[in-house]
Length: 369
Ligand code: SF4
Ligand code: SF4
Image 1 (cartoon, rainbow, N blue to C red):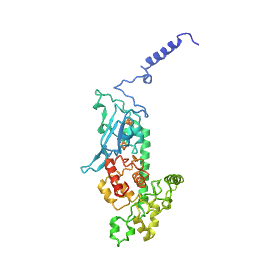
Image 2 (image 1 turned 135 degrees about the vertical axis):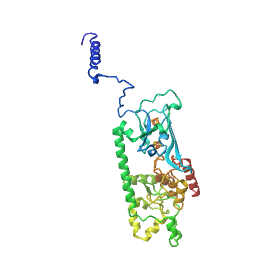
Image 3 (image 1 turned 120 degrees about the vertical axis):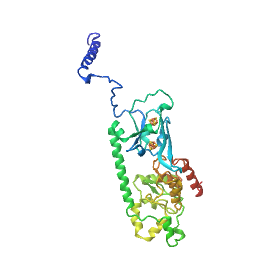
């Protein structure tokens, strides 16, 4: 143990060495001459959220699905979806405000965004003279380019780009596969052009709803099982990877509203006229949902689905963003409502009250409410 007080002198020696050394070696300078000089914050530092756009600000990634608004713990995000002059949703925000005097920088909005549209900034120069409006960031303040994102968080931004690219390629591949051979079930106009179809060939309401959608299995409601048995069976079949054979679960119901795996079933349907005729009585496959376009208005979507089974009509009432705000994709939510396993009609956040009202109307018309 050294003599009393030597530690103090050792410390002062270190300070003196760095003080004098800083005149000869910049590495010994521990202060930054802010604001003339600024140091780049570390990549994993974070301040407040910003919205990413690709190329130009019009090309923002945000689709105004409002998941972040819903999930933000202190409720400091406020979003209004943009609409055209006819009231058609444009799948982008008209208003996107974040009150940074309330934001607690938790990053939950970033975690829940399915579109990689919102990220955490590391800009720390946010001081303002005002305490109210001055601390609310609006859409123009929040929009920043993907290049900016790469500058502040290169590793994270590169990983996001790679993921988005892989997803885009997967989607393109899937679209190419499903677009291939499938002779689609006849549309309304095709059906009308055919020789008089027997009444049995008309689309039937599908109280039993779909069997499989997007990997989600729903056992028809009137299958000879109790609710618990149906739930268990669906879980069990999912767990062992069954996706296509569930459609053949014994049921006295009309054909299920959704025929699984269009690409797999299409060649079979192509073999015989009978199969094609059968397809007329069934609901649309996931690849045959012409209303699945967020650019279409509610009226246009409902027109396209007007002769389809219940699950398809319900799906057409959704906002078609597949944003999962409801906990499903659009098809899954519609199927769950049709099957009676989902009772809440207000889960489609981007569709807002328009979708909720239409779902209620469809169910009332089908005698389900
Ligand atoms: S969660 Fe939805 S509303 Fe929020 S930033 Fe992402 S896309 Fe936009
Ligand atoms: S960081 Fe947290 S508190 Fe701030 S906007 Fe996002 S979710 Fe809300």
